[in-house]
Structures are given as structure tokens and as C-alpha cells.
Image (cartoon, chains in turn orange, cyan, red, brown):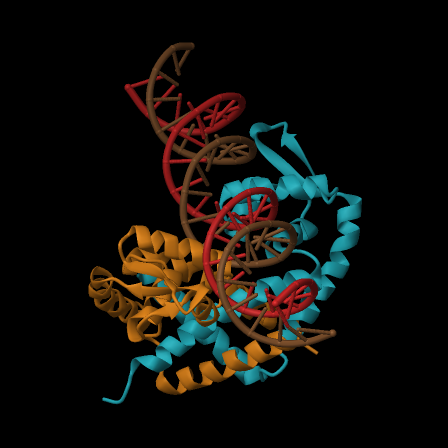
Length: 142
Length: 142
DNA sequence: CATAATTCATTGACCTGTCAACCAATAAGG
DNA sequence: CCTTATTGGTTGACAGGTCAATGAATTATG
């Protein structure tokens, strides 16, 4: 049985180093952190959204959401107000300025991702989605 | 032209959420953080190693290395001493206790990784390495 | 209806990474 | 030599995530 693990470990390392490399590049080229853009993107389609909904969508801790939104509010990208029908929830929405900026940010993101996958063929992409999904399930079961 | 980006974006999201999911599971099951185990693993084969070498191998910031090693020292896993031939460098090595614990940690890691890739066939693994490597190159060129 | 349980958001403490500034020690060059 | 890089390590400040505790508002229940 010729060396079974090294290949696995190699993928493991690759995965880690790849995703470590992605964030800073993304932030430098798109001019916003991936997480913040995801938050904004959620706001883009819909109208007002509650923080708890945002949190579920973006899947980070509520504390992080609170802080990001505070920052985005200070930047004038979003506004927040209490839901009059339920004073626990705060509703978040894009400002006009925010809405204006998002289109170009998303464009940059598309370019970024295009470049990232530029050398991956369509068949490979399908296979990749498949594998990553299976790995995600494997992880979940641990 | 039917929707070119969604698939790319899906992979992008998958990658992020997968690697986000991996670390905490790893830490819970292997009982040490991936980074720390990588540091210890470097120490395992060789004898004494300088921090700067460790840093290059593990590829994280020197400040993080300093703090991890401080922690590992307090745990009694490693010792550090100045290199008498060059007083700038500090040489790191495993303690006996540390060396004793590593074998089982590495075993846990192997198990963890095995499970992670359990549903990925050998051919797929090869293809995956290939794709991830290309993506890494793409990133580098941005 | 009054009390108990749940939900939402916030805060504080911690972890692990980044970068920038710094000090000490060594190496290189005039 | 003496001065000027350069290198190795530490520290402080920041970013962005975690968890745990808290307070306020709402919902469920005896």
C-alpha cells in the first residue's frame, strides 16, 4: 500500500493555504472584505432585512454581524431602525449611497472570481462543486 | 449566454464555508489547532529549529509564531534557547512530553483527514489537487 | 393574567491572524 | 574599524471571528 496519506494531507494543506490567500487578495482588489460584501449583497435584492436573518444567511456569529453593521452604518452604506411590530428586531437597509456603490463592488467580485477560476474547465467546475459538497457533508457528520 | 457566474460563485462560497467549517471541527476532534499541530510537526522530524525557519514552513506571521510558541512553552510541549552561535536566533525543540503527545495527535489528524476525504475517489483526489494548485497560481498572479 | 421561556441584539473577553515599530545582534562596505 | 544595512524576535494596535453573559421584548404556559 503505497503512501496513502500524503495525498490527502496535500489537499488539506492546499485547501487551507488557498483560502488563506483568497481573503486578502479579495479585499485588496474588490476594496471590501468578503464578509461585508456578502452582507451588503443580501441587502441588495430585498428591502429591509432583520439582523438575525442576515446572520443566518451569512453564517457568522451575531456579534460579528453587529459590529460589521455598526461599521457599515458609520460608512453611510446602511441604515438601521427598530421594527415597530417587534421591538427586539432591528431592520437593516441600504442607503442610496450604499446601493450605488454595490453594483461596482459586485462587478469587481465577479472579475475576481472569474480570474480565480479562469483555468478551470466547466466539467471540472461541476466535479469540484460535487466534491466540495461531499466534503462539506463529511465534515458535518464529524 | 445562460448564467455564467452563479456556478463560480457557488464554488467560491463552498470553498469559504468549507474551510471555515474545518478548523473548529479539527480542533475539537484532534484537540489542538491546525496551526499548532503544524508547528509541532515541523519540530517532530528535525532537532532544534529556529523560529524564522518555523515561520517560513508554516507560513504565518512571525508575531503569531512567537505567541504560539509562548503558549506551547507554557504547556510544556517545547523549550526554547538562544543559539550561542548567533544570539539573534532562538532555537526551538520538543520536550520529551511534547514528543510523546505528538504521535497520537498526528494519528487523530490522519483520521480526521481520512474522514474528510472519505467519499472522494483517488482519481478525484488527483484532479482536486490539480485544480487547487491551478487556483493557487491564479491567485498568485492577481 | 403572571410567570417562565425564548428570541434578538449588544457587549466584553478571548483567540489567531495581520502590519508596523522597535531592539539587539550580526553582516557588509567604505 | 566604524557605520550602515539586514536579520530575528518581540511587542502593541488592529481586524474579524468565537463564546458567554446580559437586557429588553415577546411568546408560551400553568
